[in-house]
Length: 200
Image (cartoon, rainbow, N blue to C red; front, side, top):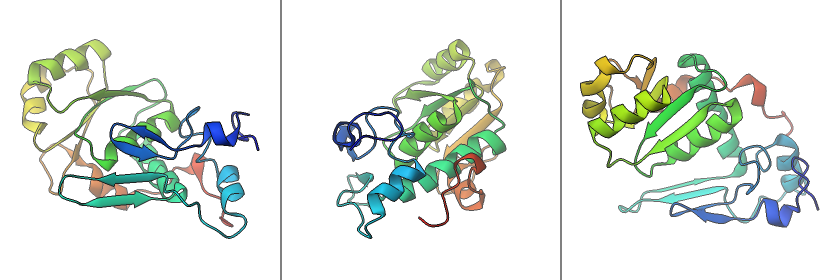
């Protein structure tokens, strides 16, 4: 059987692989566009059985676990795409710097950027304020996404970041001048370009 999106064998294209300590059963080619397409979802689930393996499975050091099916990962990545394009006003070709630890939002944002054509620039959470400033200036990023631990470092270099338009924080609480990504997830509508078909 061939993947409808990229014509590779589904066994090669959609088999699970290990990425940054997390098993992803996503497409190896055209990540976010092959396995998460509605037509491919139907092909997997048309016999009434759910896939044996989740699309995303994350466990942290404290034992907290997040497990998403292909449909759930597609739905949440569309929400993330909507936040980037509508709430943050980003367009295809714009750059986003994500300075985050290994949290589920990292993967949602990377897939959302693939969906929208936004350039995703990953950054380790060990970056200093000087490192972040260099990356923002060199890339001319219009958005930065980080957590509450690194937000003060970002705030200290904001006067030198003339291209930055939006700041997203991944945190349980709010911070002045920042949009809270987790809150926006619950408020956002599905990204209209990637609406799931109603019979799935």
